[in-house]
Amino acid sequence: MDALFDDSVMSRTPAKLRPGAYHLPGWLSLETQHWITERFREWGRGPVPPHSTMVAGHPMRVKTVCLGWHWSPNRYSRTADDVNGAVVPRVPSWLVDLGKRAVRETTGDPDKAAAYLPDAALVNYYDIHASMGMHQDREEAINAPVVSLSIGDGATFRLGNSENRNKPYQDVYLASGDLIVFEGPARFAYHGVTRIHPHSAPPGCGLGSGRINITLRQTGLR
Image (cartoon, rainbow, N blue to C red; front, side, top):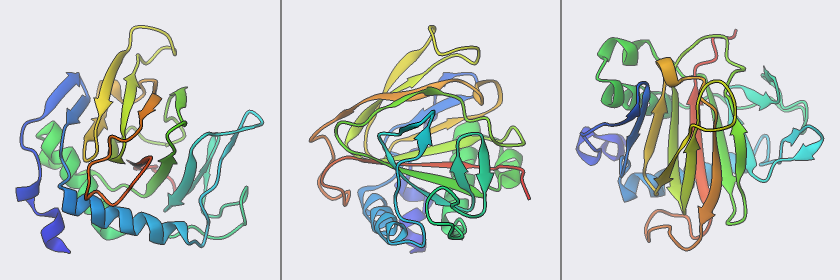
């Protein structure tokens, strides 16, 4: 398993979208993507099944599995009270290590990477019709980086400003294996996914249709 996450399979050149926001295309090898997709299927078998979180009385278009902490609008909990009440599994150590590497390779700051201890992962599955509206990740108690990994069909990711859902924003195409990190001045930027690009998943990623997105957060909660 260690070979899947060796430095040799990862991109070396950070692409800064703006201060605090980074995009590294092709950061995960196809072999690693396939391996993570198999873990996604394992997580989907429970203890908490994939579910559509209710937001303002409406189900989200994506299906979510949570690790470490269960997310529901405006709160985190250790149990999936809005699904089946089960305790969510912990974030696996390999995923924590991957998050640390992502922070190190994007920011170039080894101390920031060493201090990064993601204790929550939101694993979202988008079918080809799914999207996600502009929102902030603000339920966390501390300002630590958000690490986002994409596997499967490509997506148009919209990175906005920190004040509202309107312009200015920029659209970025995220392909399978791409990494996005936002932290510091970009940590509370509004962001969303405006569309999924069907039939763009590369052979060998382990996912025939749709998109898996894993976002890692350090909540600062106990």
